[in-house]
Length: 271
Ligand SMILES: [Zn+2]
Image (cartoon, protein in one colour):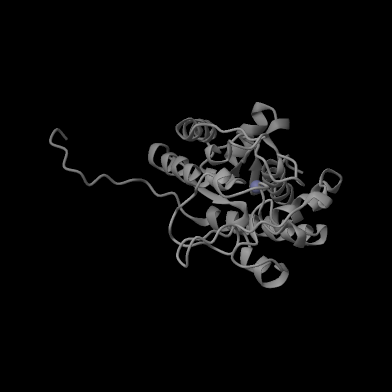
């Protein structure tokens, strides 16, 4: 059985994984406050787990890599337990990690994000990989995977507003992965803001097309955005299973996209 995590490989084994054309998963998330009831490694634990599980299921297709544990978090710095990497540094760092795998000969990379505010930066890093190397890269938040199933079959919290941060969705995942570290007696419901008909946020229920993120401390008391009181470990088990399924399916699609040569149509006077 092929190894599914790069950490335990020797360099000839990494070379072989690149030769096989395996897709590199690069998980990234954050150390960030998650209310009174959840530990600050919520995003890291969830993101790494789904990537590692997907690669464990399909080591012929995927290779998982170490988690990037700190993210872009400036909006949440008034709460203890939050670390923020400046946005340009984050893009550069993520790009350098991704480019290193392309230099080993890997041609397809998935930047898998576990923390909302990283997403726009992960998108930029993926674009840079495509622009500046011969590899293809995509970026996605793990919660987009089979989110419709969650909304249709499991969701009990208000919509929009019941899922955003330390919410029904995230708390369920943590309860499934490490229940001893969750203190449900301290969980409080504090819905994510609906500023207007057109300006609102929900993690898995979609959001308006407007990008607007205010500083948390201006409107939020507990650090929760959503309804963790609706969370259960059983829901978490299902969410994780659906996300891992979704990640493998997406990777199968990505693997089929051909990497064609670029063809320069520019006028070149000295040819
Ligand atoms: Zn989170």
